[in-house]
Figure (cartoon, rainbow, N blue to C red):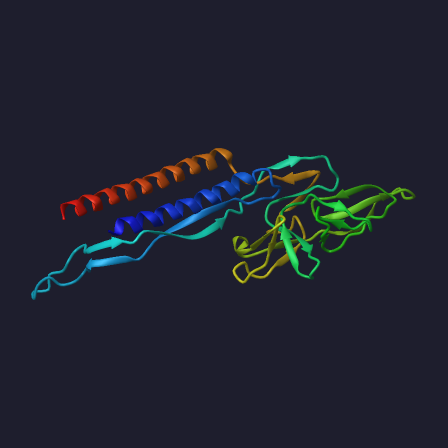
Amino acid sequence: MQALRIAATGMAAQELNVEVISHNIANMRTTGYKRHRAEFQDLLYQDLRRVGSTTSDSGTMVPTGLQVGMGVLTAATSRIMSQGSVTLTEKDLDVAIRGDGFFRISLPDGRTAYTRDGSFEIDANGQLVTVDGYTVQPGIVIPNNARSVTINREGAVQVQLDSATAQTELGSIELARFVNPAGLEAMGENLYLQTDASGSEQTGTPGASGYGSLLQGYLEDANVNAVGEISDLIAAQRAYEMNARIISAADEMMSATSNLR
């Protein structure tokens, strides 16, 4: 009986759906996190009577045919790249992106990673780094006699030195954009890697056409809606239960058929 296998694919799909939802909920407080959504496709069909086949020598055709589907398949887990809300932190080295773009991060192996998490720190050499110690490109070093650090909307990093009355500019933070940001590969630690699906990076100045602006003293929250995720979780649970009921019903029908024999 095909119903057993079809319902089993439905249960497997909803199990993965619950895993995706639970991952979103677990990262509700993760800075710059972008929620995922499971995408489903119907499986191949068994043609018991092909649509459009002729039924007589005069050319009459089957108008709808007779097809039996084989179940469901999880095709992808799409990443929703919408803007998250920004929260005031009042920390000088916290920077949020309002709009499109990613911070460029140098990894220890020489690769460039990308992130929306702007919770930066200063390492022992005064270099601007992520919380894991990875260098924020283009490699800005803040002197140890700097009294204050200012990062404006265009990414320019300026400091007030002890012996100076005017601010000194140390460099500018660049942003990277992609034709298909959802095609980036997540590697954990709030970092993404470029792929063939994402396209090549396009770097630019914050605030320029097509690039978001920077907000010093703010961080971008995850774009996870708690109410929506709980609603999706309930729907996935109900769908799983219904598929389980189908398996029970199919098993009872097979038992009844066996008893008749």
